[in-house]
Image (cartoon, rainbow, N blue to C red; front, side):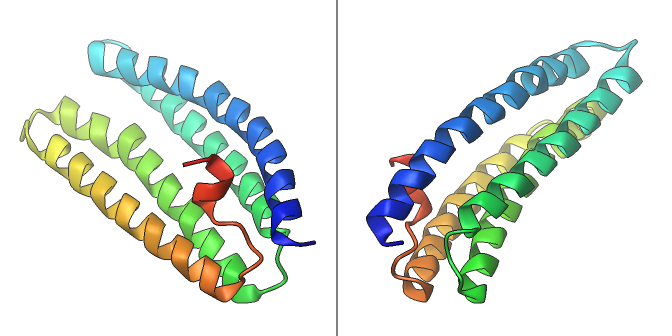
Length: 149
């Protein structure tokens, strides 16, 4: 399968994964809001947030398998895996670490600095990994091409 055929197939599959991500994002956002606003049901919302985060990790794993199924290069599959691991680490930070820091009220500026630094590191590493994927398998579309940005 050449690059254009892979890209077309990946974009069609990406639509399905987009709706799955939105399906997780809405309850995730609501649970995060409720967790940060409540003082009585913290354990319940925390457990539901952890469960949602774990389910999202499973969905990301399936998306990774789909996206990496178009290449036979082991190095390319490993690089794609690293991209999805970075995504999941960011979600873990937003869903678990960030609320814990906000609830502890120990240092009010730390979560925002950490979040900003994390986003910067993620975007720089995302671009670097995309370039390595392109170098490893020239027929494998980069993530930017699949997502359209």
